[in-house]
Image (tube, rainbow, N blue to C red; front, side, top):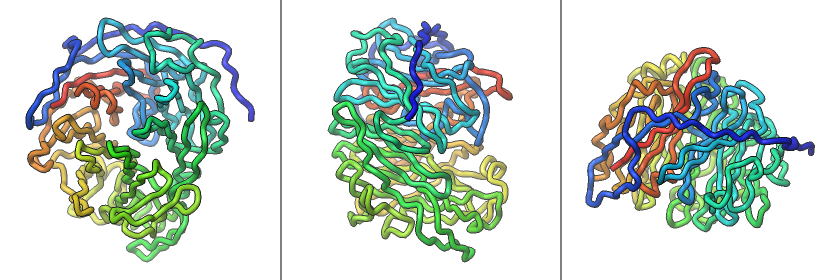
Length: 478
């Protein structure tokens, strides 16, 4: 395997450009009691005034909901990643408290193609304190780099310089993953770093897992199946598909939750070729860190690397929906403090049409967002959110310390509902059109869990390929 060798790393001192007022306070007091959901802006800082900009697949490469994570917090520092106008991958860091500003390191890798799938994802391995970076892949071999040990666990003891990073590799350590898409890092409650990715392509792909231990990666294998016959409402049969994840989320007990939708390889399952061949919202969980998968009733429906979860696995449908409603893939999921899984999905309801013929137009006009929550009996309750997204783009879901739910919609609008109402009293709690945010945003769930502050990474809308500023906005929730 040929590897790209690092020659130099360009280190830049980032200029911090605060906008929208409000200096961030040094500490964030946690409220007590059953507080109503709120969102108040603390600060908005420009990370890069000239971030790379182009639109493909209705998205931009610096902000896609399936990035896990483009922004995250660990050991008192926050990290963010993006492509700047030179097409180089940039990683920045900043201490959460004190007067330290953002520092950036520009990695010696340029984005290979104008494709919004080719995002940057960050991971941190708690056992050795390394920062891991996966980037620039869509049905292609990965570009991967990791830092020296201790960079993330003891950040103040390490300068933010080129010497802190190793060479860019086309493998995950020594693991050959082949052509892959959607790199995600996640950390188990036991402190193991894992890596999720898809092999194969849209309509014919497999979700796989790898795990990092003792400085090396081990491939666990595929856990979703691309094969099996599925019959659509119009009688057409599809024999290939891929499972699109709304996320992979560990709860406090160590259970790994996965909501998903299927995309069929045979587009004849659609009533019209202008639609989107996604159907059903599914749910499975694992109690052994992704080795064995169960349906909501606790029955084993898959074993990673040997017997994957398939479209005909029993009891895995959380919300049935046919393929003719423009159902979005890879939206969002989260667990609340009681370890209850929730998901957010969006599609064009049947009251508007039973046959989506123009995916982009009809989703922009008629798509609605829905909140799903799993009950103690294993059944899912679905409620429509009475604030239309008016976008083809995806929504993110987070919870504050009181289990109030927040939907970060396209362009940064935030809609929230209280746990006290069983998440029925949805209302807009934040809306700043002057942010000029393009579509999807990324959220720092690790910081929200640590201090109740929601950090949102967003990029301003632009035209053509004109670069635009990328920001971090900080909001206090709860």
